[in-house]
Image (tube, rainbow, N blue to C red; front, top):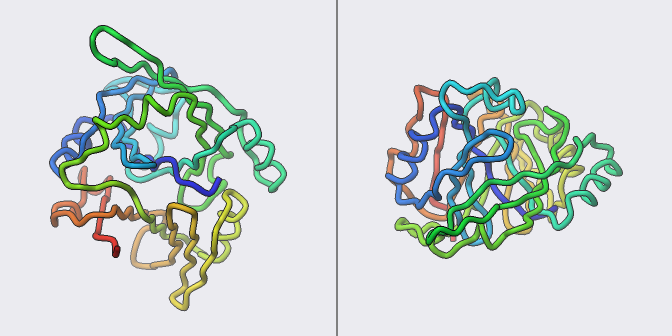
Amino acid sequence: MDRIDHIVINTQDRIDEAVAFFERMGFITTPRGYHSIGSINHIIVFKTDYLELIGYPVGKSLEQLPQLVQGPAGLTGMALKVDNSDQMRDALIAHGLTPQPTFDLSRPLDLGNGKMADVKFRVTTLKPNSIPGSDVFYCQHITPELVWRPEWQTHTNGCIGMTRLSINVNDPKAASELYLRAMDVVKLENTEANACIIHLSNFQITLVHETEKPLDLPMLVHDKPFSKEVKAVMFSGAIRLPLHKDRK
């Protein structure tokens, strides 16, 4: 559990606007997916991870996923890649956390030429609000070949991955202790600027405390620079997506 699998953006019932936004930035978005639990999604696939735009159809109530309807729009969750979700759940309990029952998730995929396949996952989630600033969960891919497809990975803007996430929390040091229990950390770095940097094998999470910004406001960094449009506020303040150039 030291590898980022994907980052989640809750678009609520405005997924079409989110897709259009990312496509203007030069990303390829996959065809719409329809989860077995009622949510809909598009993903932006990189070399080893992906960004998921998730939402629900306009006018539809999702009793199974109240967090999509009631929770904030924007960057809301991160999935860690695991080989066995059931073993992961046992490990989380041993770490003193409270995981929910592991469940199966799927969505149909049109392969073209009249062929269909099911993209399948096993997912383990934590009790809501277990980790400050993000819903951390664990994803086992049963059919990874149906997610990481070459035709979805060649973005015109040249982006090949996500590198780090910054999250505003009340107490970075206290929050980092919970993150250490929820994931295998390669290195924990405490800075002089009241921040903690959590190094994973393929990703970096910075926990900061900035009083002038809302708590839990995350900032996602890709490996390529983008236009100033990206720094604007989406959806009348509901979704913020400041993407910046990462140092090579």
